[in-house]
Length: 394
Image 1 (cartoon, rainbow, N blue to C red):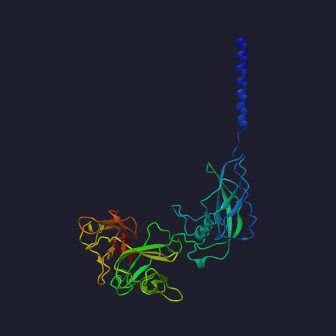
Image 2: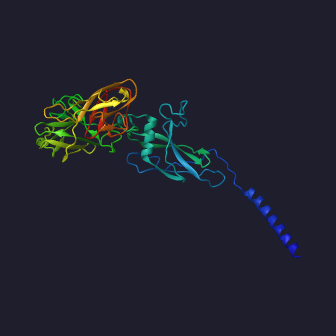
Image 3: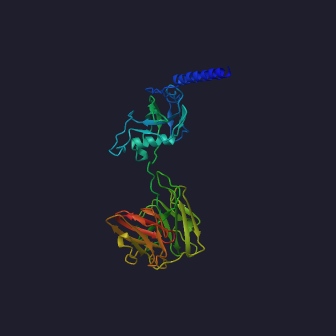
């Protein structure tokens, strides 16, 4: 009797299990991909979004009906022409200005805030605006969402139109804006305009923050100065529209030329080495006298792949040739028909030598990497105190 009861119970469990499996299969959700989903028109869509002064652009949508509640990543896409297909080359790269741009930021919720800067950069790319005066005051921009499932399945919303006021943004960061030293204790001391003869550049501060559009930011220079001979800082060699001088020549009272005039030549209080720090973004300038004198070298040589690394065959010239100068800034006119590498070296002992990974300018370090040089004609300027080098394309 007990055996019969147990067998009956097992049969019942099997029947229930079979029925449950059938029920599970019947209740499994089936993925269905709708043709589209709804992106709502924002309440502020009738106004103009000032992208330079906006905290965000809020968008909301209705979840796509996939037949069940699914996890979706929503990527905003924008277009200036209501075109949603870019022209691609054989490598899959966009040809010309893109017709539309998908923003990198996304939301997993049906409510999101678009970063105004990202939105504006997309406009810059699509419009191909190269300068501030090219940017329209107001634009109609088409916006839609690309909803993507974890499986890669995607679906696009309807598009809406937003009125925006864009602002100019440089898509490729401008090179650092350089300023140059000129004067009686700079180069040949003749106040000329030729780089490497009468003027030489300050160095961008490595790792410094520079404005993407203007290149303005922190610069520095370290060198030897005498109190008898004056000097100034200019933005463009040969021009005096932008210049720094001192009140009564005092380095502690720097003055940027303005509508009321310009400062006198700077003169250091005593002969020695000074570090000059200029921030062209904030327009601040300071001088610091150094307690320790840097090493002086009787010569500066170039060696690299271009001359089979033979030390002594290519010598740079000291730029500072005024009476009483100490050589720390060097110059050489270099030409190569193919890409090559080189380093700065004092002599065949290779101690010291300077190398770096950047081109056309960078900061050489002792025993650093071979400097990669692209084919071309250059005037090379090198400061052995700071390691700063610059290849000016001739």
